Image 1 (cartoon, rainbow, N blue to C red):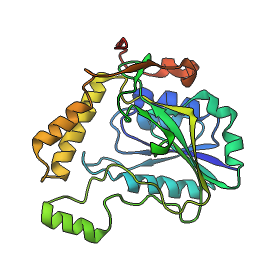
Image 2 (cartoon, rainbow, N blue to C red):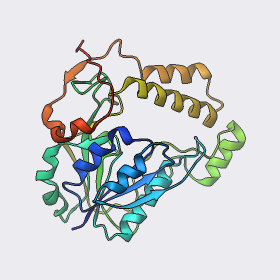
Image 3 (spheres, one colour):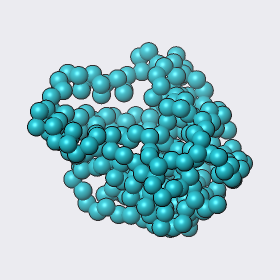
Length: 277
């Protein structure tokens, strides 16, 4: 059974060496879709021996991203490489090392079509993660990436915005634009059982570097205002602030077994120790 990892990336040179090094130990191939990076993301991807395809979208307008379209491009590229299973994951997240011990038995199960995994997000460093909101400690049933899916001829990621007709109505009535499209909904064309593995943990590094997190929240806030001009600006500001506020955060220590210790040194971010509250 051929296992291919599919990763979208943009300016992820700070974490990509860690991700690719870990993936290379248990997948057959890796496909990277670069969304117009201006750092060394593409060079790092091409330097990895397991990366068989790098899809470069080239210079793009900052708000031109369409996530379902990107995942479908990755899916088609994996099909062309003969993938039997695809591990969809982001450049800034990685399943725990223990996954290597069971991945081959997982994909050998004939009646399973999808595996989902628990995902935790360390906060301002690698020592602690938050438990006060699902966004920091996702149960397997709530995650869409990382996700391991058996390849079928009809496997696809649908557009969460709905049909073209509905999107035209939103455009005319509320001024919503067609692009960008952020977020995904469960893929179609899946065959087999859906199995949730909360015992296998993926570490999401999105919140380890607070400076980088602020930049991302600002980007999403600007995008939200442009994509949904009917939404009050105060609501957008409050939404963006919630992603940065830790005044009521609850912390739990990160289990060292969740990290690929041999590759941690490749992660480039300023470490700020955060004591549990």
